[in-house]
Length: 317
Image (cartoon, rainbow, N blue to C red; front, side, top):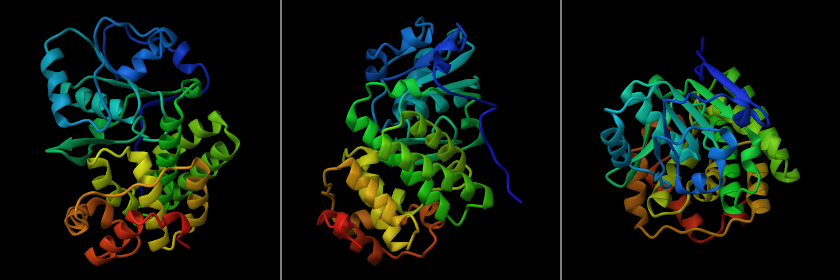
């Protein structure tokens, strides 16, 4: 037996965010980048209550700041419009204030608009929060947001989605339904990347959120967090950590994922932190490691981090 959890309404397709009638009495949470790209004009979202200072890899402090600023004001909905960081924050704010949540992703890769997960930093370290109260009430997925997306954002978002669905396919917590969704998601994303199809990327991201949101990611994500804690964008880190994790796990997605990383031409990354100390942190990430298909030790983790630091993942076969 398995249970699938998802938003009450998922609205998908070109122009959907433009045609949707957003509620007027809403707190809107976004980022400086999303606001500067005129998405408010495109969506018609009311700008009376707007918090536009969410940065990548947000912390719990930003959530607490927003709640402190707006909790006593009159609004009925919390709308998040932006990338995964924005949606992680807006969902958590809506959850804590007991307000309905509308999520509008302007990048495609995090899956936050679909899942019951928000990732926030606590004391400088990333932590995933899992709760049914974090599921958006309405998710609006419009591929028009990918028009003129900066290449670095496009690249990081695309490989993030590929990492999520391929890791979740291999996860011990998966089931026949999530495996089906994750397999189809990877097919869509792969086609979208190879043929530069924005519609395929958006649809693949939707399927990814439904798949991994009801399963879990695994070793690749656990390895990525120390890199993100040093300021490397999440998707950029996953390009290398999920590649090496798929090799370790003997995943059927290893070769295809590695080819997409090469296609997207990611520059190499390295970890400044002592690798033994980083491995100690990674081994505490039981949510990801306990669902990994193969048991992994601290010694294994250090070895994998060494390969990444030596820039050998693209030649790893």
